Length: 549
Image 1 (cartoon, rainbow, N blue to C red):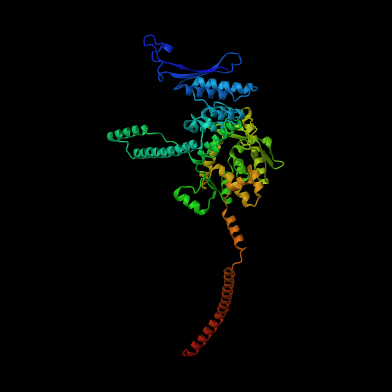
Image 2 (cartoon, helix red, strand yellow):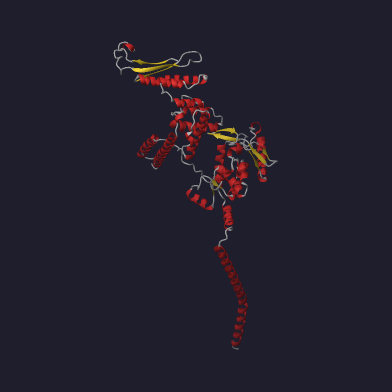
């Protein structure tokens, strides 16, 4: 295919505005004109011609090097590879029209052999949009991905070339997020301080009203209260980007995933703690919970269930407390998967809250599909609940909404998971017990099962965990009495000499105390007789000495 280099003058006639071309008087000056190249490319599928053209070279030598570069790229495709020839021709056409630098020959050869895009101009933002559009997951998951992309990924790295994204770029992004957190905290503190000061200004008096008006205007100019991007959110942002880039690797668009290698602050999951008397006393004094995740003792759980025994949703609180169902699983449990005759229920659906909207969905994970065994008491509680629900159905008549769920609103319609949480918190506050979250009832069920020496695999299967390691990592709270018994059993296994001597001394002391007590008892028994004899003797002496009348 034809190709050439040529000189070109860009000077224009001041009157007509047209290029002078070969008529330029300065054309013969060596440094006046620039050099250009033109290379014919393989024709399009419809037979139309296309070419690569580029100008602005300072010398003929530089122009020839550029032409050789174009021909080297054309030579990458074998003569019997029409697809490869078309890909390279399309790449050169785009590079020519967009005036972008010619790609490296060896890099283009590698990408061509790997089946990757030859241009590599796809941005992170464009790929994230394409990736998100292809996801087929439930709505709540899509919304979470969309939030990570819109709020964090696009503003920081969206305009970067996907194939040039590096670990350092991601490190800079997370550094900027931490810096923004510090600024948000400072602005929130300033707004809070201004509101506190405003609350101290009286309403009465013209001077006070004017001051309050000025302060309100200043507060309105401040940034609103905002939430920081916490460690858990940062970890989710990283996971979202990592998943998107893994799919890009799978489609041979890139070969390296920088999100898999960037380091961010670790997320420390809060450990579940038991509400002991000491922790309750401190909470009553300060109002602060020792941990975001708190667990009731068996006595406290029993007290709560007794307190809510007449509540319409008592069976739900009972089921979560003993069998550890998730909130959405309990709200979405159908009667068709609840077999009270075989003392079991199958978790196969749940109600998911997305914002304030509710949608039906499958369990959280594949391991969430599970069969949960029921004890006799729980079965009786569910039977009573079903009888009450049947009575409600008759009372509502044609207005009853037949959802088929075990736990519903008064008219049979879906329970809203958010409203269930609010109701639980009100009941806990009214009971006077130390506060826990609704999900902490699930923690409590796991703790009770582990305290009852139930095999960890059975506990994991009941809770719907995919691995027993998850169960061990999350549920490490230990009930006080269980911990005391374990400590005593452990201590008895070690035969310490000082312990034996202490026990011997204790037995000796107990024996001496017993002997002393017996001796004292014998002395006490003789005293009344001696006293009676002395009294009788003294009485006789008195009678002898009494004068006669």
